[in-house]
Length: 143
Image (cartoon, rainbow, N blue to C red; front, side, top):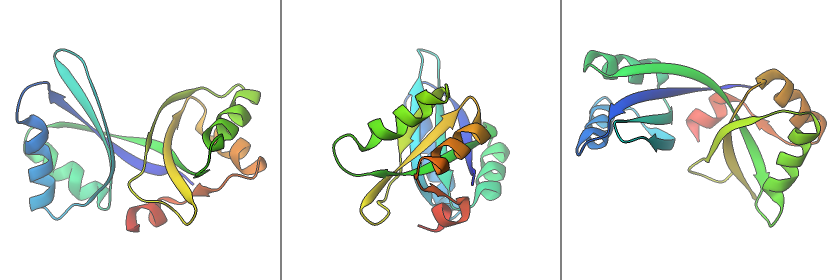
């Protein structure tokens, strides 16, 4: 029920993001979702890709610092209040959302959001118990 995300630490300067995407493209790695957070000196590019190990290796070979993190992909009702329902169910269990970002494609009538929680297993259990769909990683990588 968890999804592997890779995080790449990049200098906050012109061309670095383009370089990462070029390297992945040349290696045949497809980016399925992404989030970029930055400070004045560096950025953290978080990616869901179809070939995690290959992506990590080609980027490390090119001198990038890459790490792996487990996140959770959740189907979110694509209507007003859909995300609020999920966040309220997590709040009732005192589960903190560290960050989140949207996935590239919809899943039927629902959107897909990637979440990073402080208590991943507890969050998965709470989401399932409240009737939300948590997606398997393999399904997400192939979408």
